[in-house]
Length: 587
Image (tube, rainbow, N blue to C red; front, side):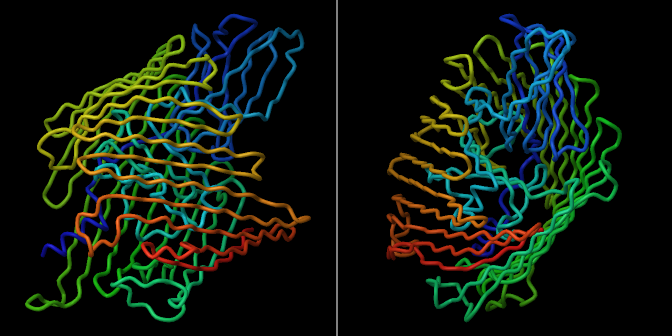
């Protein structure tokens, strides 16, 4: 039964309190050299059915939350002033920034700027983000790329907040954004071990789209693990598409996948997803999602799971926003016949989730309160939280308290903007977190860090994280130039009795060949960590090199991608070798 419990935990991590993790846009508006109050701020995007609007406060600041990730146009307008439109990129689990300086104008002329503003001072959580373009150019979408071995503390995963789901049953092309919250997690988010991995799947749009992808691999090209029972050729087919049912009122998205994954362990991967997005009036939105999937690990077991969720987002005026989400998850794990155990033995579990949050913008304060609950296999859990995000001068402070199952978890995080423009910041945090759903005592985490913006699209940061009796040093940097060149690196040194290290560095280029495009990305990985069971888990040190090649061919309204992914191309004996080919057509 111990092995059965191990695989159950492998596929279905401890349930979370279905945290709502909506990103936001903030900024400050100046007229001349003074703060501009009463400026109307309107945000619009192709991920929104209708624009959202707010008004700047006495200090010229504004804050709009409960926004889906995407590219936004932020328009600032006031009578007798120029109307300015700026571009902002809203990322999953982060706060974007768009400032403006308005000038007097008798005819109220309009000015548009497509330049984006990178801020490292407005998100108090320590995060690493990968967008769709970066993930698409990597040799396999390794969501754990920036999760270094940090003294064995767990990392929880949420997909399309509010629903937890087993990532092992999802295909690559369905995932659109990944954000890893490494520390300083706000009170709104549950996080066992103080870390959280957020994944967002694709959604519908006003315009119709369709994508077809097939990934091919062969056991002769790959190193086979001890539980890999596949032979010959494997392929994984993926399809997704979406569009409008009623213009600016009702959108849909649907996806399906079937085949064998190109990894060493999973096989028989299949599933599907359906989403509906409905606009109920100008400021009320409803999302409905059904997601199902199944897969197996060699001959050992088969996992099946589905999740149905409903989420409501409403804006009552420019300052008050409320979000409520409910979901149900059902999971089943089937085991093969074993001596003395009936062959029909199944492990089944159903979990119900509820999460609700309300926020109110009061001057420079964003007051938040909410609750979460889940019920599973005879266990019930509730949580309540209240917090305040306060910005004044160059400080942003995010403080609050969370009540989880008879335990109070106070948390506070702050950033100080060194230049006043979001390009340089120091940060510090302290908080208490649960180590697991049945932990006897909380885990205390303190952080200290420095972050800097590099140009208009790059960042670099270094953080020291202290977790009770362990500590770690983490570095994260990345840079992109004109969407043609991208480079980045992550490094973690952790110590809890024994030292561990993990580093990743990548560089990629997209080279135009007439109307075509050739892309190459080189990823160098390195890890050196304590192996508690030598000979079972393999060597604790490896430095594999991965390579991704992409060739894009445009045909009128159709985009064709031909790709090769190769992991461990130089043959490090401590790491597996994997080669696969895939092709995708997007309409």
